[in-house]
Length: 172
Image (cartoon, rainbow, N blue to C red; front, side, top):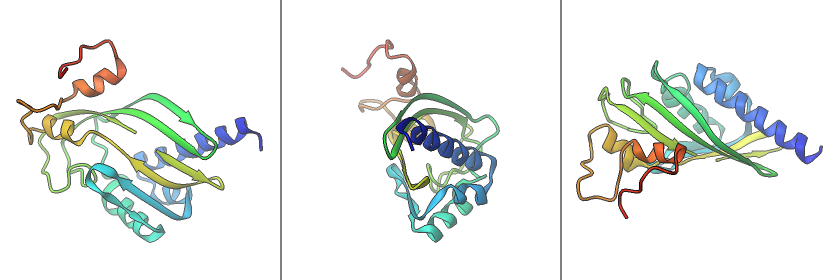
């Protein structure tokens, strides 16, 4: 397979995987994954290691569960290597439902959240891992659980600066 066709295959696989997550299709989500996947939502160490643990995590905490009615996903950039995709996204939503994988144990606050997310590893045509990173301090500020006064943290403006790098820096 040529590099261009391999990259396109990885991009198509990732699109299928994300679409299945967002539409609540657990079977298709799992069908895109390799035999021994792992998933790590880095800031809160949520996810699983191994097919059964990943499936359980998806079924109980993510696939068809996270997405409030007003969710908006904005693609910022994508880098495709020979076996990995780094997808930079802005995700916007109102915290109207429990989001175990991002805010475990936090009841809905009805506050808007805007956050940058970013890595998906592909091997033999299947997703082998996802490492999802975001600025948890920014999320906590936005849902009212962290007072940013005197701290080097921001709210939604940190995500907005990803989309518009000309915005003023506030902590330097």
